[in-house]
Picture: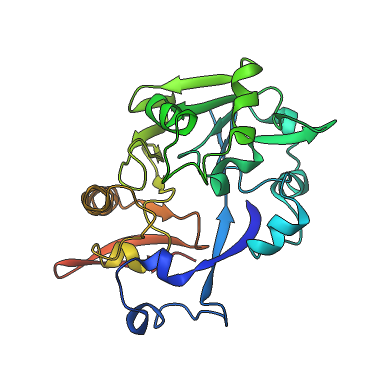
Length: 266
């Protein structure tokens, strides 16, 4: 599922990694921006329709959309509709964290007011992430935008999680801190297959292959490094598929000496 893509400064995405290295992975435009896709995951499990991440959504003004370089043929709701899923069909929305590009589609505007986009869904968010989002500091307030999540609490649709939490017998929210203190990923783990939707622990696959390549947006970079190591080792052990948000990839993980290699799955 997709809400399109937006453009972000490549130096910000790759942190202290010199441009001469990261530009081998992705070419920047004339403004030094690189594309970040807005991928969501739709899961059907145990009779539940589960949506992970909601992109930027439809509330951006034309000026904001231009500033972010937003590009889309259709938004997430339209993409869901093309697959026969309407907003009222969604039972659970999971946000890995509450940065605007991951939860902007949680709400939409009705008569100028933000209301939940998915009227019958519970919205699952880590309690610590909720506290950080509702009490932002100078570093975080630019991306923790109340219109993206406060209406969910007001409507009674908010469910706060305290650590790893089962969603269904085969789906689980797992803490994966580093990008934010209470970031979570979503694991699908059944007898026949396994997958992990990694959220913002890495934006490009090379940031998994080279653990020290960490975004400047990560609030706890050394924690991110160990979180990535743990996720990669688990993926190898379970032969799991890795699904990313900001790069449209579905990969399996191999060990490559002391590092990792992500190999695309057809």
